[in-house]
Image (tube, rainbow, N blue to C red; front, side, top):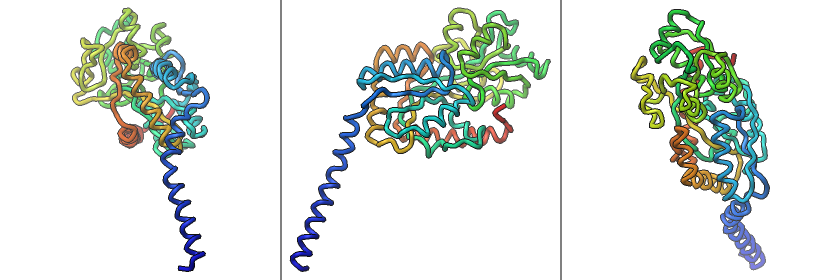
Length: 331
């Protein structure tokens, strides 16, 4: 090789090596510098519901360790898809996050014209926790137990109405649809923009029954304002040990488990996603947060970001198939 050419080759090689060596440092620096401003955590449901309660609990704890406040931005409507679309189009720098529920996977089938893709438009950050769906009625209701609710629905098809959190693709709404299909009963869902408004309607007698998450319904159950009839998990919920499962009472092997998680826009630097994952799990380990989750009937999540991504993929397929089979629509 000519001496001049060799010198040029050596210079290019050295520059490439220097650039390659600096990449991990740059990634680490990005994580260390993050966050540079307040973080917005978007919730697709109204204030006062289970998602809102948990997002605020998590945000308060994480804000202290990250050194920047986490602002909760409620954007209810269309089963959470308004919020999902907003975050999908947000800058991918970690300063805009999405707090999702286990209804998120079903949205792709229920709303086929979405401008985002469940698995391509987001970077899974962390699984926050898991929870059953609980079937409740007002304390003043003549319905005393779960079998009585099913009997009433069979005697008067379409006359029993119920709330189901945010409706649409939420786990509470899908749990109700799966139950109606498997138990062969006809009940009418009344849609609300979140657990808060749905519970208000239930407590006022506007609806006959409700499907909700213990984190929002539990205070009213404990206060004697609501009566818990059944839970949808395979096993009884530790927070409601006296309440039987749907599988025990009416539909063998029936199971619907709710969960909550945090997503970031796709393209968010991996180092920032890792930092957020670490901070979420650190918050979940704090005794005050852990005790609060337990009191709300939520089991803290113990999954990697990759495991969380796999869960979203699996349930997107499962819920999508069920929604199409049942012929469900947003209305």
